[in-house]
Amino acid sequence: LLWGLLMNGLRAAQPQKDTANTGLLPLGKGGRVLALMEQCLPAELRVETDGTVTTVAAGFDFDGQLKDLARHPFAGGALTAHMKVDAGTGERIGVTYPSAGAPGARITTFAADGSLFSDEMVPLLGTAQSMIHDCAIVRGCDSDGRGGGGGREMRGYTLLLDLPMTVRPRRMLADRFPVEYEPGAGGRIGLHPRRGPDEADGAGGETIWIEVEPCVVLHTVNAHQSNDGRHVTLTALRSTPSGEASFIESYSSAFLYQWVLDTTSATCVREGLLCNTPLEFPTLDGRLAGLEARFGYAITPCSIGGPNRYGPPNEGILIDGVAKLDLRAGGVRARWQAPDGFYLVSEPTFVPKAGSAPGDGDAGFLLVFVCAAAGSGEAEAAPNRERADGRAARLYVLDAAGEMRAVAALELPGAVPYGLHSAWLPVEELA
Image (cartoon, rainbow, N blue to C red; front, side, top):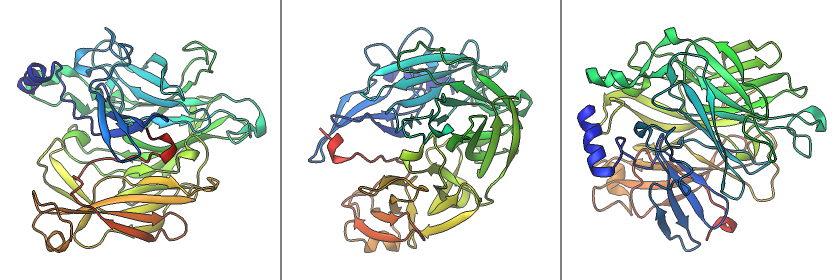
């Protein structure tokens, strides 16, 4: 590991290899999109109406605002790969973490115009730094009262996951991965009040820390607050690794789980499993991020194990379906299965239907990329299989309503590599 860090430093002027392929963040105008990788500076792209994609800047640091002495070189910058978008304010919010120094959670917020709005470090309660891969947001009360409280003014939150997937760089001295599952470090969820447009960082008040059972959460589904503002509900994919190797080196299945957090008593008043189907990479109608949604969506692994060519993790998974999840009653409401021989590239992308209201969260379409393995009968039979390596890919359009059926399929001219992520840009946001 140390040799790899050294070679990365010599080749790329930073210890961590930045492939900028873990997430995409549209900035809302001019076709601007950030390609993200955890703990690294983003690459800025521009997407035009004719389909041209141009790299505007690699290692984009917002004129130095994302690169300072508080960000250790091992962090490379940095931003999270998973930003949340508040459809009410247009803000984009993400949480990352330092690799050295006091444990903390760094909340970075971009304004609706794509400018850097806020950058705030929140101290963690534990003595170990958590690997905070994702976060969740709760919207405050907006003009139509949808945020809760029937129109009363209520502040929103950024949810911080201080869970025992710990980061200890000294592990690399023993040629171990620096991130391991350490349940003895305990688990906490933080509710950090979001600041208003005319307030300074931290003006919203102190973080409310609530103890929970140790676990790992790599990806959240959604969060919302009750009408009286007392309770915050977090829904996420939760796993409990069997050993310290954790998800990073050995895959651990994740399941839909929900916590109800009392902001007055700072306790978790209810928690539990919502579904016993293994799931990954959840998504939902972005118009409901931070508000109560009945439906969410996730992909379903069909096999776990075998060597992973691009590890870690050393065990890979194959994904062959999409599940429509009932976030209120629990369970799987509907499933879509990829055709034989095809596997999902990654999570689906939700696109609202034109002129629709968000409703329960299924008034839209899911865009699903699938690919077939090189040399398979399915790839050989595809009319547009990739000449370079024999793979084939398709784009399916699923109607999220009802039974989530495919309403269109498009053979793609080239292969979409397994593991890539996608984002939807409305035509009015293109350059």
